[in-house]
Length: 201
Image 1 (tube, rainbow, N blue to C red):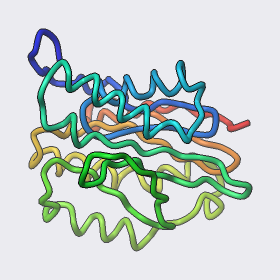
Image 2: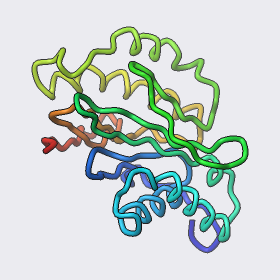
Image 3: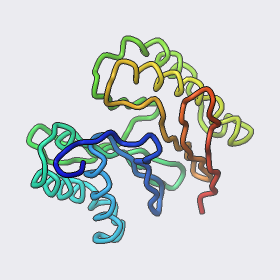
C-alpha cells in the first residue's frame, strides 16, 4: 500500500523468511507480516516466544496508518526444530484479537484462504492427503518435492480462478530435520520452476 491505496503484491514478492530453526511465512497483509518479522529479528533477537507479540505490535502499527480487513486476519506459520523432527506452529488471533501459538498436527493440511469455498479443489486436497509421505520415504530431495509439486500447482491455479486475492504462483518449503529445499513456483506453463537447495546445519 502506498499513499493510502492498496496495490497487488507482485507474484515474485515472497512471504517466506528464514530464521535460526526454520522458516516463517504468513497469510494476510504483506506489510504486517514483513514488519512482524523485522521486529522479531532486529528487536527481539529471534526469540521465538516473542513472535506473537511482534505480530500484534505490527498489526497495531499498521492499523494506525490504514484500514483494511486483511490486517486483522493476518496470521503466521513457522517451523521449529525438535530433538527428532520439525514442528509447524500457527500464530492466529483469537476472538478478542490476542495472538496465540498452536502446534500443527501430524499430517495436517492447513488452508488459509480469503475465499472460503474450496469445492473446486476438494478432490485434489483429498488426493493429496491420502498420499502424504515423510521425507524418509524418498531417496532424495528431488523425488521428495516432485511427489507433491504437481498437486500444489493444480490447487493454486484452480483456487486463484475463484479467489481474487490469491495468486496462482507460490513459494514452497520442504523441511526435514536434516535438510530442506525452498523456491518459487510461477505456475505458468512457459516458465521454469525455480528452487534453491539448502542443508540445515
